[in-house]
Image (cartoon, rainbow, N blue to C red):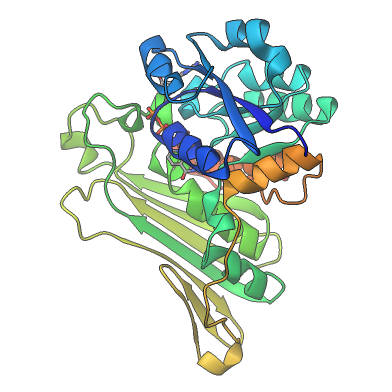
Length: 332
Ligand SMILES: NC(=O)c1ccc[n+]([C@@H]2O[C@H](COP(=O)([O-])OP(=O)(O)OC[C@H]3O[C@@H](n4cnc5c(N)ncnc54)[C@H](O)[C@@H]3O)[C@@H](O)[C@H]2O)c1
């Protein structure tokens, strides 16, 4: 039997906890968490206590120096502003990378990370989980080869209420469109193809009256797709009392598909939607399987793909600031 994939974590906050549970569920024959690093060392230590023999660190460079040789892969689960040299150091050591979305706030760092991953020939996976879940994956399978004329997505809700959180600070999160609604942006691109140009308008009427909030409260972005399709994505992040809305509509010549909790098509006879929810592999199981086999096929979004989606919201931020349409990086 093959050895388990040996994994280190950089960032042991909220989303790391989710991945750690998924990895534990795969069992010790498949994945073993051996090192955990967080700027808050006591947080890394508390998490390490749950994994036999795992070591805790406060600095990823020390983690690489001391246990790098025993690692196969690294999860990078830090907020957008906190990405630094970790991805490049990991790639240079030949470690495969799982990086949380959005992969960066600084686009040039994203390009350098992408190049390091390419040069090292390591596998990479980005945390766009919708790609691994029904109904998003089902929608992609059924729709992406069809002629989409328009695609629209809304994500209206709240954000972490902690007044000191990094989500509220533009220079740290990049705003809610970049931070969370990037999931919808990525799904739109996965279904309808690449985006060439964006034009964005942002509002701050509620944010201006909210403590420590420098991100916009409302964001609307029009999207021009390479295929000729058009679309928009809208985001609201101040609905703290409930009542939000989230979903996507894909409009084609013969029907409209609604993607949300379910996938529905009108008229129904236009597309045969499976009546049973397909059993898809989780994003963590897919990554571990890819690393164990050396074959990246199970990974549905690699670093370059993830950077293309991040480039859309970064271009939208530039457009909102300049008041002009902005071209989107095409991944050359
Ligand atoms: N894929 C998803 O569905 C999903 C869900 C939630 C969060 N995320 C993403 O995960 C990332 C982290 O979010 P979170 O909710 O875990 O945030 P969090 O604030 O709960 O945790 C982040 C952790 O990173 C640590 N950290 C920051 N800089 C570090 C560094 N240089 N080295 C080591 N540790 C460092 C912090 O101390 C903190 O413990 C964000 O980009 C977010 O968008 C993805």
